[in-house]
Length: 153
Image 1 (cartoon, rainbow, N blue to C red):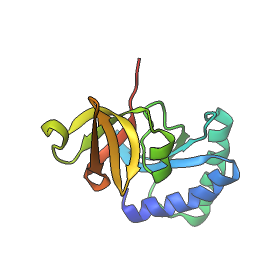
Image 2 (spheres, rainbow, N blue to C red; image 1 turned 45 degrees about the horizontal axis):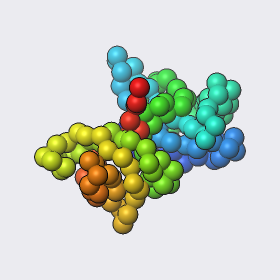
Image 3 (tube, rainbow, N blue to C red; image 1 turned 90 degrees about the vertical axis):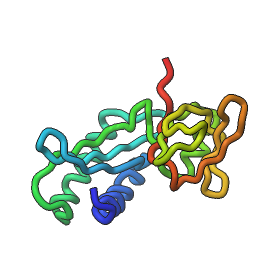
């Protein structure tokens, strides 16, 4: 989704999620199987219910119909970010400190790798602080393509 469109949909959605005491995690707009999908990810500490998703979906759908910021047809999906939740906002790096995260960087960083798992320490001066094999490593956020909670079995 273009950054402008993502910002528009995010700003439209945030008051709705706030009203329902939910966190707006992310908004995606992508093409899958020849169809455009608008995905809105919501969360809260105690988890997201089906009712939460339905409430946000209904309110956002009405607002999208009214303001019509997205050209053409698409499917709206509202869901939880899942157990491999992406970390996007500054508070995410505080809330999930101590958790293991999967990281993808734009170019090789730690041990000449672009993908690795580490323990999240936090955010320091716009750098993600990690603990890898008892070594503290800091990677600038602009070098990180993606960072998600690691799925552990």
